[in-house]
Image (cartoon, rainbow, N blue to C red; front, side, top):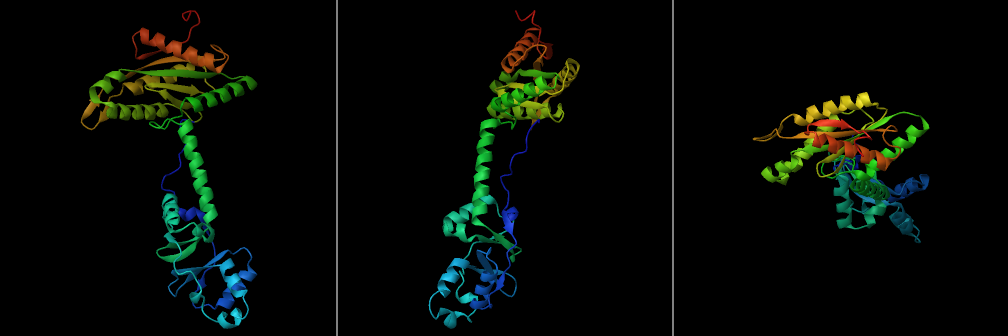
Length: 317
């Protein structure tokens, strides 16, 4: 799970669309009342003109309450629905974003959350959207947003420490039930501080994003690349023996050494130091596995950087 898809910020209202029949503006009020009586699920009906363009909206409750009064049906029943409709409903194009329509409703009045709003395509009636569906969507998007803040690094989009630990716990639990090895790689950039000091944090941030993309390019489906913070990354390889971990480490080291191009700036001073630890060979729980990979990374640093080291209990003493 190198990275998980995030929700698009420009998701439109089209996926909230419901197929609600429209009523022509010349239809009698009595006929519209019959339509509501025949279909108890209809809450509101859009009113359209000869060009099938929406011109109003009539709400079941408003219409039935109006006709519940004595003699009203005889006086108003044959008049066109255009005389009783709300001639200022919310009408939006199908491409309107969820966030945009929510602001429109807040500005227009929360009563539109109840009545719903009309969706068009090229100004012609397409369908309606329920205000409660919009509220559910907004709530769901907010929950997903908060989940993203809590579980993903906001700069690179990679899982953060919280999500990494969750995945690592799940992987170890699965491995303990169906014996299989997994590898953890602690990746620390060489030369990153000098980039920040020389080019500024803006370039530094762009470089970290590029590093994240390069790490993902080295992994297969099901593996995880996470950012712990600063220039520290962790890679979790599922169903991986030491041979595969070494192969991936070589691939990552090669990718990190490729010069980074940012406009007219070329940065060729970046490399990586990688520590590798295996479960259950080198550790039997999450914390010990992370510590082992971290210690191995420092061995790689001490040995000259731009290389990897496999955890060894003897040298860790």
